[in-house]
Image 1 (cartoon, rainbow, N blue to C red):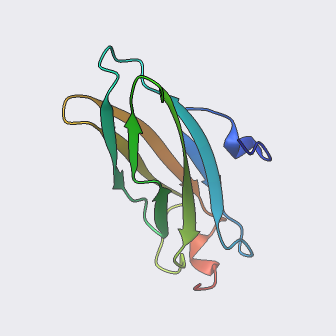
Image 2 (image 1 turned 180 degrees about the horizontal axis):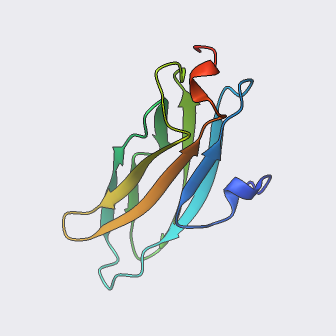
Image 3 (image 1 turned 90 degrees about the vertical axis):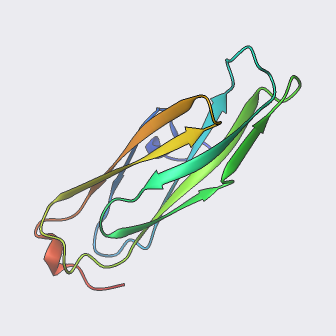
Length: 120
């Protein structure tokens, strides 16, 4: 597991601060299936914060008796904040297996005023 930045600490939430010269922020997480049902497949559902594209790899996490932990990464790419009026935008990633749901909030911070960012 790559541990090169504070964004890679295994917190249940995501936060990215964009400056005008940043092209993307990638963060990594390790999750563990603690359910008594060892076999489970969780699919990512994303509520995208305004002003970014969100990519999750992989989109499905498959657990079984031997594979109790899984790694994934989430990448935030600015789309151009020219139309944003808020310094902060919010979203979430929800992992669902049909019975359970695990939610992680997402907070994006834009330089103030955000509308001065160049369109990417």
